[in-house]
Length: 276
Image 1 (cartoon, helix red, strand yellow):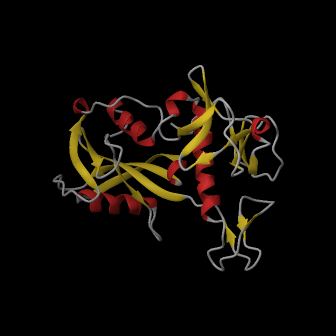
Image 2: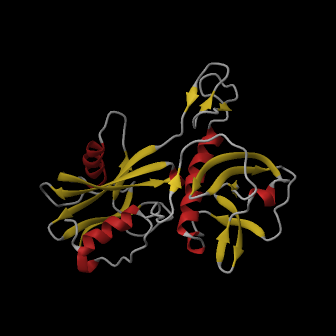
Image 3: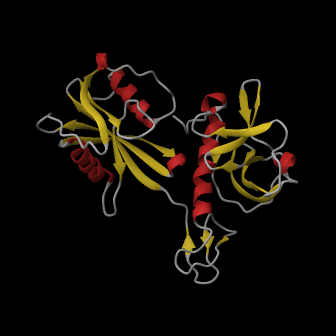
C-alpha cells in the first residue's frame, strides 16, 4: 500500500530545525507540486537549489536520512530551470513509492498549516510550537494539533459474493467499497453498521478489522473491515452517494493489483480467498 516503503523507514518525530542544503523541499500550488523530470522519474528540489527563492521553510519528517521541508517561495521568485508543476494525484507512476508517500504526507500537513494560520477562537495569527507539532495562539492560548479524520472502508460478503459500488459524481469511476467518516461518539464498528445501512440498506454482522492506511490527500486515516451480510440481500441504494451497487462473484470482478490503495488491497484479498 501507499505507506509500505520498506526497507526505507519513515521517521515522523517532530523537530524544530534549520534546513540542510541536501534536504528535499516540498512546494505546493494547490494540488500540484514542484518537481523535475529526469530519465522518466520525478524528483523534488533540494533546499540548496531553492534557498535564494524561499519565503518559508518548515521541517516535516525524514525517510531514512533524507529530510523533507514544507516550503513556500517568494512571490516574485521564478521556478528553477528544469522544474515544473505536476499533479500530486496523477503523477505517482513517475516517482518512487517512498517519494509519493512523502509528498502525500506533506500535503496533509500543508493543508493543516494553511487552514490554521489564524486562531479559530480569537482570530489572532498562530505560531508554530518549538517542542511538538502544534500551532499555538499567543493571544488566547488555543492549541491546535494536526487534523486527522478517521474513516472506514468495509468489504461486505455474502457467501462467495462481494458487495461492490461505484461513487456518484466523483472523478474516480472504478470499483469501490462502502466507505464513510466516523462520527462523534461512534466506534469504528458502529460506523461500519451505519454506513452500510445508509448507502445500501443492508445489515451486517461478524465485523473484522483488516488494516489501516493514512490518506494524506484527504487528511484521512482509513480503517478497513470485512463484514458478512446479516439477513436480506436486496440492495436499496442511496443514489446521492452511489451510482451503482451490486453483489459480484470472484469471476465477475476484473481488478488488477495496484499496490497502492487499501480498497484495492482488500478486494485482492477477497479474490485470492484470503478473506470471506
